[in-house]
Amino acid sequence: MTLFSKNLFLLFLLMGLISNIFSQNLNEAAIINFRGELKKIGDQWFLNTGDDFYAIQLSPEEFLINNHILLENKKEIEIRGILKEDEIEVYNLIYEKIELALRDENGIPLWESDEADFQPYEVMPEKCIGCQLCVKYCPYDAISMVKGMAVIDQEKCVACGICTDGNNGSFKGCPTNAIKKPSSQ
Image (tube, rainbow, N blue to C red; front, side, top):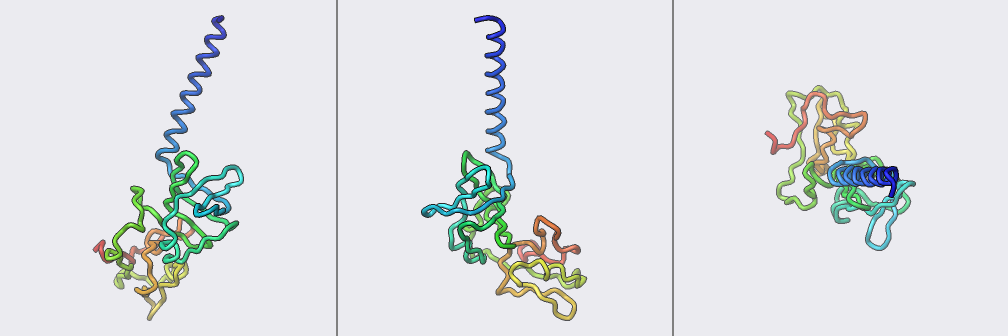
């Protein structure tokens, strides 16, 4: 083997190692945005991005239905999640203008939380300026205005957090921090 062949071999070996390390780091830790079309095969949902086809780890169907999401084949969806091999562990999804968190920032599934811990959000009247942004962006129509102040319907609120944290788009959440979960008092 000539010196040139050895160097070329080492260069390819080094490039392969670097590529492998880089792809492992991305797959293990990075939350990535995906957009594509849903496909259900058997009991498993998949995402067709046009370039790739991934299995997606969702919550149990009951959790989705309780949060007003009924998935359908060939419908567009946006997903934030971690790619693990050819499967996406879904953290958040946006489906038909409804955004739903499936896992917290540590990856813990929200559907496994104790329902007794569920507490709807509430408005702190002294901070509400009556801007009506929360009313406009609440996907569950759980917020209305009463005498110039936001009021949350405790029966409709699913604690999605859009009123406080925003919708990852044009709405950044309550501008005066007038809405909170009772447990964060």
